[in-house]
Image (cartoon, rainbow, N blue to C red; front, side):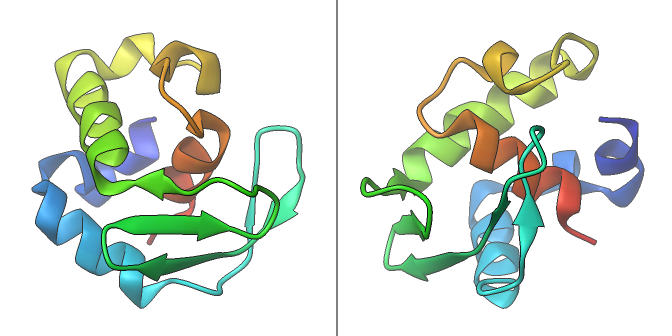
Length: 96
């Protein structure tokens, strides 16, 4: 997670992060298992091309809060303990 801390991702508010996510939709990201995916933002939801269910903005907010509380503890998707964690973590790691 050091790259995200350096990039300032953890300094963003959820609204700033959501705007950044909108700017990068349809870009290809890789999960921890190297599975490629893209996403699209529609309102307060992220739709990942590999999933049928959406990931909500509120879920991203919970994940961001967990990362801010203790970034060293976030060692992989399971440590986030939120729905869609593999995609959330992959996007946050892959954002510039």
